[in-house]
Amino acid sequence: MGVQGLNTGGSIAPAETLRLAELVETLGYRSWWAAEHVVLPSPRADPSPSEPDTPLLDPLVNLSFVAAATTRLELGTGIVILPQRNPVVLAKQVASLDVLSGGRFTLGVGAGYLHQEFAAVGVPFAGRGRRTDEYLDAMRELWHSPAPAFAGRHVSFSGIDAQPRPANVRIAVGGASDGALRRALTRGNAWIGVGTPEETAANLKRLRRLSAITERPEALGALEIHVVATAGLDASVVRQYEDLGVDQLLVFPSSIDLPLDEALAQLIALR
Image (cartoon, rainbow, N blue to C red; front, side, top):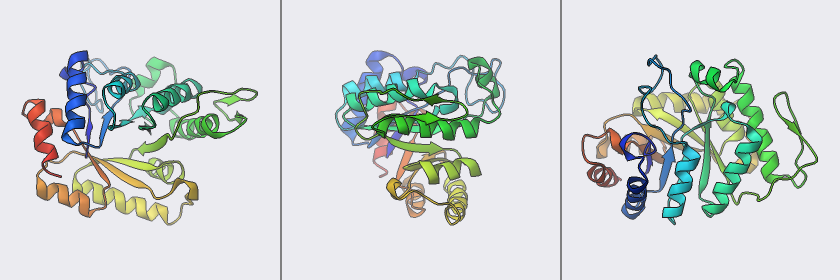
């Protein structure tokens, strides 16, 4: 079980982040995931997830802070909106965080869904899926090729190198569109879904259908299934997710009407 969303709201102060990171690790959680929105529409407009004045720390900065306070906890972005980032710069940031965390980092990515946010950072909203695929391929080239070179529509480079190389960056792909599911199958070590057990069952059925007609690189291994739970959790609901084949359940402890310490302890007791 992992925690999601502790880089937002009332838990972002330095002392509180350190306290929660140590508590999450002590309680035995597997992972800490940090979400991203660079900006939010103001006034709020669907499908924006939060009010525009909601504080939200940059996920890579938050995870670097958490990495320094922990030794075992896996760290992940849940998710970075990849087409809004410069992939060459992000590849360096990811490698740096992976090295400093001792290989504990997973880069969770998504294509994004708020057109206002894309406009604010100067990236076209159209074509964001293709841009996401290209950026993933370019970053893998920087991480793994002895002589990195890439020529794409949106990014190209040659005659360069980028050190240090990451120890073992894994890619998790978020989203439930057919494009996102195919991306997880062709480029991801894991898929990140969001939903109730019923919604998860429907998404996994689609994922299995697409897997039958999509070639998956052997080097990626088996696709792990991570799901951000949106159902009210008790032991029976957790078992429903497990019975569906979910490898890791990600929970929002801040969504429970209890102090965070109590919510974290209550959730870990459900495992």
